[in-house]
Image (tube, rainbow, N blue to C red):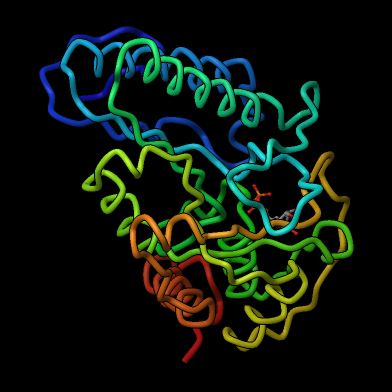
Length: 266
Ligand code: UDP
């Protein structure tokens, strides 16, 4: 059923995965107030259902709770460096407050929670138009357009392939109270945005160049998860290396969107 998570709902269910929220800068900035409502009221509504049903509830939190991190790589004990009034705050602070609600419902009402801090994730079937770096670069390269590198491209991200992430979310939900979290879920494959652009150019054979455009405000300069907790608690290690995962995205985009692209890689 389709339902707005900001409205309360009575459901007879056995488990909840709360993944509701726009997750790209471009999409959550279309409606920042709605984004905060989704994070905060949405968390309260799923937690109220979990309380009534006495069921386990998973919260998709985010590496954005660390903001522009002064500590690298990021461990779960780091409290972060978030600008509370900047353009990213609706998402960052919304997700932080959702974590607060999850832990307060857990402490006060005994709700069985699982909180994951999800780092940059990518894979086939991402939207080509919501501004994330991997689909942007792949779509641009396949169309022989310039790859839009924001700033100088020295900022880093660590990219996790979607199947690895899904395995870990399911493992967390199947595990016992040791997996309450928060647990960083992400791959430690850190690279600069410029290196990612160059890799995608090489893998697609794109002859188009790179254009540097303005870096968005508060864009985190570096990001890499410390995944020791996920490894210790869940025995999880991401398996898909960036080249292999990005190639799957390229193949998927060129198969499904070939009409849009003049050039299809071999
Ligand atoms: N980025 C870029 N070009 C693009 C889209 C994004 O250089 O066309 C950069 C962006 O500034 C950021 C990184 O790539 O430093 C990851 O951006 P994304 O929006 O995918 O994820 P997030 O910033 O939320 O980690």
